[in-house]
Length: 58
Image (cartoon, rainbow, N blue to C red; front, side, top):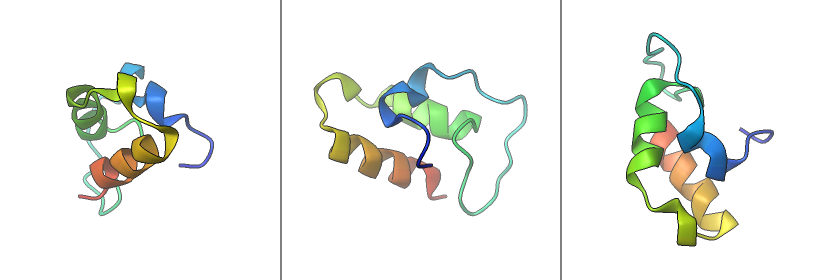
């Protein structure tokens, strides 16, 4: 998670199939969908990283 920019997760191309592990990967379709639903334009970097952490926790 450290090397990915949380603001750009919504624009990533999702993987074909979901991994369904306890901590989802960044390119998981579920994570990307959850990040696209958020209005990330006016979020701080800290808020973005918290949102990404919450989206990955399944």
